[in-house]
Image 1 (cartoon, rainbow, N blue to C red):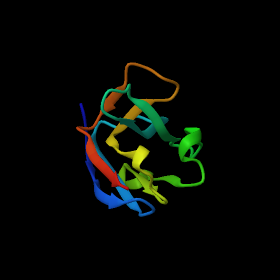
Image 2: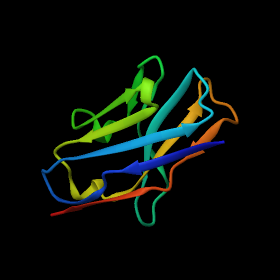
Image 3: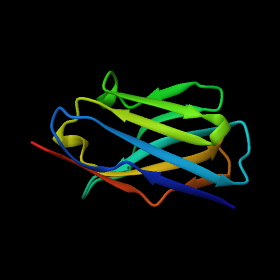
Image 4: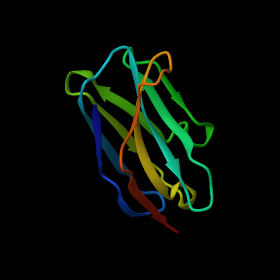
Amino acid sequence: QVQLVESGGGLVQAGGSLTLSCAASGIIFRPNVMGWYRQAPGKQRELVATMTSGSNSNYVDSVKGRFTISRDNAKNMVFLQMNSLKPEDTAVYYCNLGGYPPSKYDYWGQGTQVTVSS
């Protein structure tokens, strides 16, 4: 069993920054991929950024150049540095841990709210 605990969400003005953190505990298989997804009201959950245990990263186009994903494999943690935040970044952000390649090994955090005011 795996548990993911997120932290770092909050309210910020447009143009500001936030850093999200996610700590995984339990049985952690490698290789794996950790990442962040978000879901805004009335919209489907979308990928924001992911990084494999081998440090290959992937970003949705809308956050490229503004968000940076990083990992601390020794601590089983993933981070999302969010700069130049926009109101359209407002969403609940979820941490995910999955197998690589994808498998039934797939876990989600409880989500953390990020609100960007204009």
